[in-house]
Length: 95
Image (tube, rainbow, N blue to C red):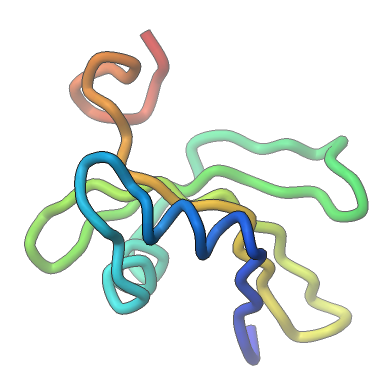
């Protein structure tokens, strides 16, 4: 992807993350080495997915994003640190 576009919601969630602010470089690290754990093919206006990735410091990060190949961009819908009370220990499945 040529560039990423952050929604206002994503920026707000990164700033207000209850488990600690998520910096852009952390989110990009998580995306670079991440894996798709859920797909939302019926989302509109673009299909989206949930990616689990880890920062260099091994912080788990979830990123919901929508690739738009025709426009060469990736829309970052939201990003957050998965809550261990709501996710299995591997952060791939919800409890």
